[in-house]
Every structure is written in structure tokens, then in C-alpha cells.
Image (tube, rainbow, N blue to C red):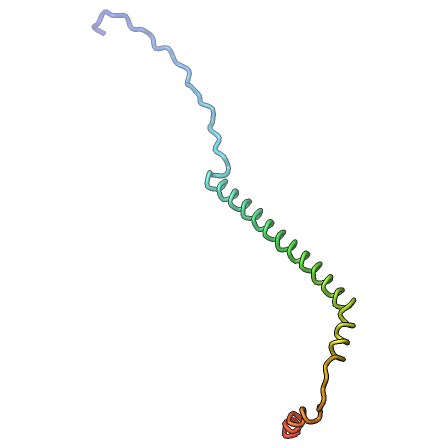
Length: 103
């Protein structure tokens, strides 16, 4: 120490501790995947609901149609059958009878 300058003592400095950084458990890509899955499930539920609604609506229309046929349709069909006039039934069906007998 040839220098005549006084030596200043080194004072210890406290170490600066940083708070630990928490990393989320799911990466950003996982959140996007979860979002797409949720949207896909909602879309499928909407499609299933529309399909269910349409099948219920068609069943209701079919039963109303059956009631209309049974209520007034039988009398109408009987009138139509009785209105058919066959004058020579044996002659008209003779060729059909021959073809059936040849089998």
C-alpha cells in the first residue's frame, strides 16, 4: 500500500431477492384447445336440439294425417270403389288368368 490513500472498508450489501414467478399450469395453447372443445360441444348440442325438435314436429303431423284418413277417408274410399264399373270382368281378366295358369 504505497498509496497514502485511506482504504475504505467494503460494506456488505444485502442480496436482493426476487419473488418467485409462478407459471400457469396450462400453457396458452391449452387454453385455446379448451376453448375450441367447449365451442364444439355447444355447437353439437344445438344441432342435436334442432334435430330432436324437427323429429317431434314431424311425429305430430303424421298422427294428424292418420286421424284425417280414418275419420272421413274410409267412406270416401268405399264410394270410390263402388263407383268403378266393370262390365265384362271375365273377358278383361281372361288373359291374366291364362298367364297365371301357365306359371
